[in-house]
Image (cartoon, rainbow, N blue to C red; front, side, top):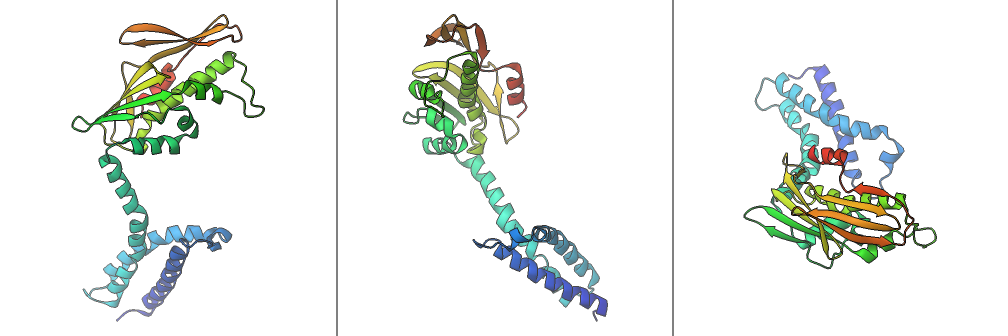
Amino acid sequence: MMSKRRRILLIAGYFLLAIWLLLFFASYESGFILLLMFPFLFIFKDTFVVFSVLFSVYLFFKSKKWLSEERLAGVAFLIPAVLIAIVIVVPILQREIDLKTKEPNDELIRSYIESNNISSSNLINMSEPLLNYHAEEKHLELYLRIDREKFFDFMKTASNGESRIMDEDTARYMMNRFYLDLINLPSNIAEATRAPEKITVYGYWGDELICTTYFEMGNGVHYRIKEPYPKVVLSGIGDEWYLQYTLNGESKDLLFREEVVPSEFSYEILDDSLIASLKKK
């Protein structure tokens, strides 16, 4: 026979369970503003899941019969945890499986670039093939081509549309843009796919290949940069800027911009701190 105290506790539990289910289903309805009006309901909605599981365990241990009202109630109080698992945990697991099994293709990479960085999707030539995937080796070759004209158009100020003054600060900003588009963007490609075990990124300035960057899957979640690291430097010499880069041990100079504010500088696409952060992933 269930004690009076336990009966009252069970009724109160049923009442709280009914409120939780109401809040759970109502929170997925558009226009439902009760949770916004009363923030403490958010806390109740989260903490009750823990309470319901503990209460379920309590009811199972308190009952000595295999089939009793208390044990049936214990099953009922597992409903919040099951719903949370279905709505939150299952989609997360499904996404993880998709990321590890979905092989990269042009559509997937284009979607990743467009959703990851609007500026990158505007600067990178998306009309050319973006990749070549070797499924057996799980090796992704990624081709990222920065459009010259779009890049310099991007350097125009948003306020008046006039060309940005080509000075040393602009050069530093440009190299940061190169880093974001040619190195940082592919380093985070695990957001779209984790199928490749290694990635080779070919970075182009227009039609010129200026850097090759290598990544490998590190901890099953992130890609880490590998040696040899890309060597790309933007240098100011008088009123001209040069893009200096090294490929296959050969150093090359490419005229980047003329008739700029005379200055002497040198900015690398990767410094020690950036390399360290990419290796820690």
